[in-house]
Amino acid sequence: MRSAVDYSISPRVKFFEEDSEDIFVPPGKVGIATVCSITFDGILLRHGIPVKPNFGGILSVENNEPVVFKDLISYRGTSIDPIKIFLMRQSTSVTGLLQSGSGTILANMRSIPQSAVGDASLLFRQLHESDIGGLLAMDNESGNVLGAPVDVGMSGIVVSVGVNALAVVEEYGIDVNTRPVSTIMDYGTMKSL
Image (cartoon, rainbow, N blue to C red):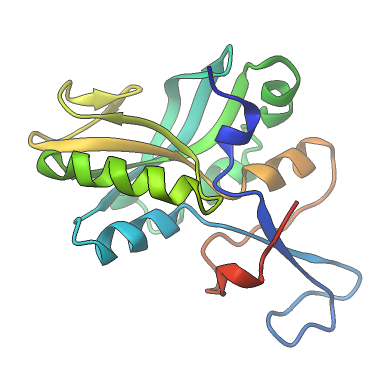
């Protein structure tokens, strides 16, 4: 059984005050950087595993287990980040997941060649030792993973997104301006919550 921490890519964040030299933070606001799911893409590519982002969506979770994507938007079919669209719609129930084990979160589905599943599984285990998680499902044969279609010869990988933590803040009625994939930073400078 999964715990709520499995629905976060990393417990590490970085805070920025409004006078930060690193990124622009509007007056009266604070910046919070989380680890983005695109981190997986870079790591897989660095290890010779081709990866393709397919979908962003709302994933239903019941009893701390991912069940099915309720909504999906193809990365190929939009010029706007699907995760940003779902955030604007306020479609999550991360708070419900934290309180009862059931809710909805933001997740991405990527695909890799079926022949690379063993190497990818090993990489994901190694990443977990570095506080990087968020792998929710990996399917090697069925043609879909949690309801998201997977091309022939490919394996689908479902990962949670870094802004799920900020979705919780928004669920509590606090105004959040989210900018997914907006900068690159040294992971070592981020602090664990």
